[in-house]
Length: 304
Image (tube, rainbow, N blue to C red; front, side, top):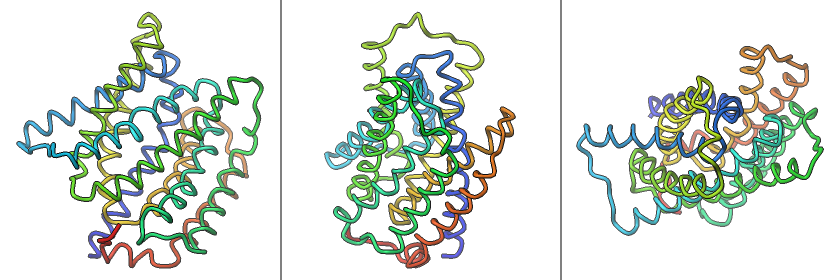
């Protein structure tokens, strides 16, 4: 059991580091590829890799009605509409503001889990931790709390709606997808998401706007391989082993890593507020986990 705890901690760290870089990579990729095509290309790469792995491993994808329902939930609520909204919204607002808005995710997950998962109710520790963590993210990106145009407001709304849909998806997958392997869940959901994103791209964007330069191709490959295949496989694996709220706390960690990466890669200034906000996020995560975290790792939950 101790070995599994270490695997979960390692999975959390790997996912946080990779997702911490995706805001920046998405922003860079948008300079070359329109948002819907960018998201579609990302999942085309991911689905191609997952299909190859499935073929060579000889595994069979479950296609019963229950599994299909979960694939559609994941495809529509995790991999298509939310990603289309994130890619579209990122055109009009700073990455930092996107991080603040998406940091509402743990709170939304907490509310959904309280009413939809009988074994994962909110408690004072979770609520306090979520409030502290969100406050830390706001402190880090306070200077990005502004908007100038109507498109900025729409961009903000797109990020918030995306976080709501992904939170709902997380809870539904936790509730109904416990018998599906993380690999097949990833493959089935991304395949549905890919089809929807291709439809969005063909309907709303022009192929002539695509520039297949280093930035565009590099962002697609990075987001497809690391940002999708690796992270979501780990993410769904962890979802079967920890409470949804604990997993959603990744939304507090990734913005901090995004700022650090921006300072390293783009030579952006590291404001002192980053360190204060980061400390507040850490305290929030520790507070949320103060009661029952280790029990949730060692005692699998059966009822949802």
